[in-house]
Image (cartoon, rainbow, N blue to C red; front, side, top):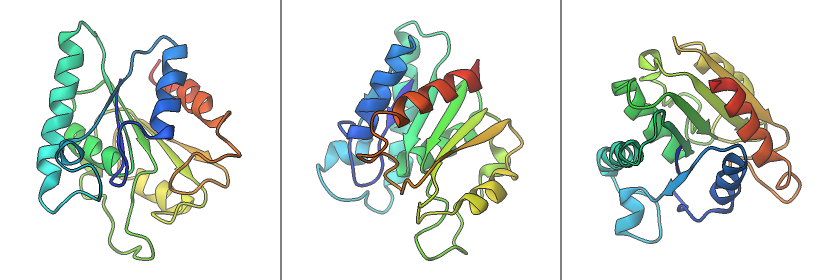
Length: 188
């Protein structure tokens, strides 16, 4: 699995580290990687125009994992990283065997009309969404509606009382193994 971070984070985020450990416990090797925007600047959100370069970085990471001998590669990302992963896989469904989208940023907070779903009808890769019930980037009902645009098999795992960051002190021990198990079962 190639696993990447959101706009305000990096591959050392507690969520990514906990998820990588949970997946490793199920026998899935995980490459946590920094997107190119983060490699070029240690702090702050991606600059305008970074998305294409970040998508190229994801393609390169998947290719590197294939070169190491992986038969199937899964692509996963938190927030911005998940959005970039979904765009890459919508453009090339053969790139990954499955997609894990953590806190997909459905729309900017308090701007529900600015949906980031134009590519959803092109998603042909099985996709598991993990979304906090208190996520300001989209409600559970908005996520359900958006998922209906995706022709590929997809499911939603709701993280109760979680915000956009997903992991907190209350669910730190339980959530990562729950996500790993749900994704493992989802992709078979």
